[in-house]
Length: 356
Ligand code: NAD
Ligand code: TYD
Image: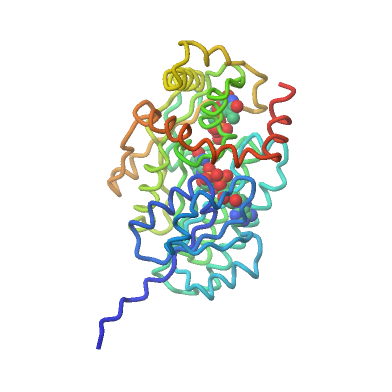
């Protein structure tokens, strides 16, 4: 009798058509034996083009749908034999959360609740399943220049509608572990950058605007600090936590790469000028210091030593090492960027930057 390959179950990736989710799916296709099911509502930030090749080649099963849809989510767990979840789906942009917080409460809080309940109902007392809730370092609030980086025991102090909705979802995920025994793990990561990032976030926005010789909006004095991590390093950390992390635990993920916004913007300006053969200083001339973001967190930084000590993970590149290839990627994918910067993006852009 022929050997039958054991049924490995299915890995559900919510938000798998977004920035980090699509990078994760690409990495996971090579490294996990589960079937991969992506559930994504394809909001403005989700784009099937990010994973179309994987869907067309049959590596990924794509389901368009909303994580708040209880019937759909419940049916997915039952029909697809979901045994592991990596939950990315979220409204993710701080500026949009300030303009309109309701969608953040709905997707980030209620959507997470729906997924946790569906997993609980499908998995019962089973112990081999895993629910990895992907979150952000922004739940810890802002650091002063002299504060030590965040650790897993830092107190929650979120300050934007985005970060407070993510904080709420983290609490739900942990309490579903504590109360119901759901096999939950949580990661909180610093700012990501890399391919397929929607150009409302600092790095892709500045690259594309610099290429098109549009203004480069720097909020306030530009001295805010973020800890930057290449998205592929984040995906590697997530796979390690999914495979070998201890259930009920939280792991912080960071780049050990604190940089000021203004320094990044200037670096991108020079890289773009050089690649396009323009006179030095052309793009820097587009920098505009605009009205600061309300409640703008001054600094984030991560101490990822738990992940390093327990799971052997460390970031493999600094921002300076990785940015040249990232700038090249956006130059080589101008069509992708043009397609997603549709009418809706232009409306958002006018609202966000028009009056600053
Ligand atoms: P993104 O905005 O690029 O992608 C979010 C994805 O979720 C999109 O594909 C969107 O269509 C989908 N989505 C939104 N609402 C949905 C809903 N109701 N139902 C189903 N799908 C829905 O976000 P990202 O930057 O890839 O972030 C992914 C996750 O990682 C988020 O949970 C975010 O909080 C977290 N995170 C992001 C960063 C970062 O720097 N980008 C850092 C740390 C943590
Ligand atoms: P962003 O990419 O929106 O990520 P987050 O707010 O989650 O950290 O912004 C990164 C930093 O860049 C943040 O300090 C805000 C700043 N910023 C600007 O100065 N100008 C911009 O146009 C944007 C989008 C961000």
